[in-house]
Length: 496
Ligand code: SF4
Image (cartoon, rainbow, N blue to C red; front, side):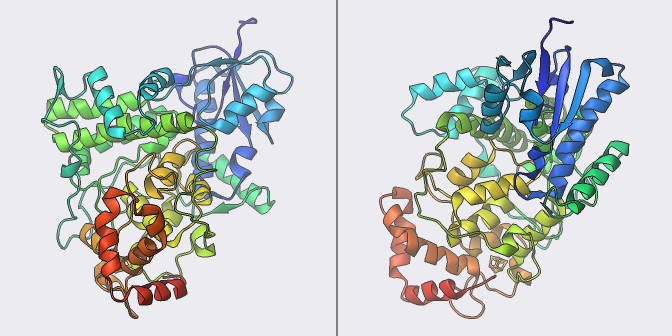
């Protein structure tokens, strides 16, 4: 054992899949939590996962192979050591630090995703530089044989996305599903709380949002409870209502598994396998199972690979829609007290309370609003990384700069994800109780999303006029007789 290298364990590597049984160095560096203001629930979850991993090894009688260091910076833990190895970490900053400070550290291939980095690079090198998730996903499905009849997709199509867009049930305030399984806090969480309280009190860290109880799995056992519960009680409704949102149902039929997956405590293949078994043995509907597999083996893996493939400059150099607005204070501090717009208020309140929103609130409400208002895409990406409990350096760039903000000019998505209030009205119950009217674009009750949509098109028309998919909306915008009024009104609008 003396000659064996010690495995460095970094954020995102808190499960047994990152441990091959040798000695470990688990680094708890305060800088992981303090570089920028972070959601308190996120700090809690990530610190709790780290300490639960150490505790689990001690409880299993393996404490003698774990060195758990509490330091200010990762540099402190690395400098002067030549006995380390590491599974290549899931962040550009961490990779650079390991290589710079941990001279001689042996770097092993990354783990925790369905497709490995070499295979993606080989596929991407064959392409034209414009990547589409659909092509990547088809390749993965064929390779793995998931939902396939020989070389044909079950159901006739690889993607059943067109069956994943139902409006919420009429008149419903919730989907009426059982409450999700929640983890129980233990003495590790108590200690985490005490430390986070102290950091805040001593001004060593700045947090936003609430941390009233831990809601997400941070250990492999908890992750498997959460997965089983999802498959039993919510998977069937996941597909049809994937794009819907209801004010009084913050989880809808979503799995809540992005946190344990991004912490490294749930193997994405295990999640996929559980859904496939439910389809095979329990008739879980294909549209739900396929949608779930696509989210994980398709989209999640795809944004991970794009993070590395696009490189350092992605985001820093692209700002195709010339968006430079600062994020307002109420947005940064998750303060919904002055927000009248019901959809936006629900999203900011939910984010404050849970550090999590499902993807359609992220995209259709927050991302859409930021796009319309021209928020700086790099700052917006940092904000999403910091205030979402599943936010990581790798997951947000392609999602925010590419998919949500179109700041990369179309490398990820063929058109901006912009929509007016009518679409929000169709996919939610928010508009009925809102002081704005989704059909109005001028006047006291003009919907900030509807008016904002036209003002956005007017502002970005020079950048979008050559995009075929934007031809129709731009044509409609040019015909509006009250466009100048709409633009002036939106320029004056404060917190909506
Ligand atoms: Fe949101 Fe507009 Fe609907 Fe109000 S009317 S909930 S602001 S989309």
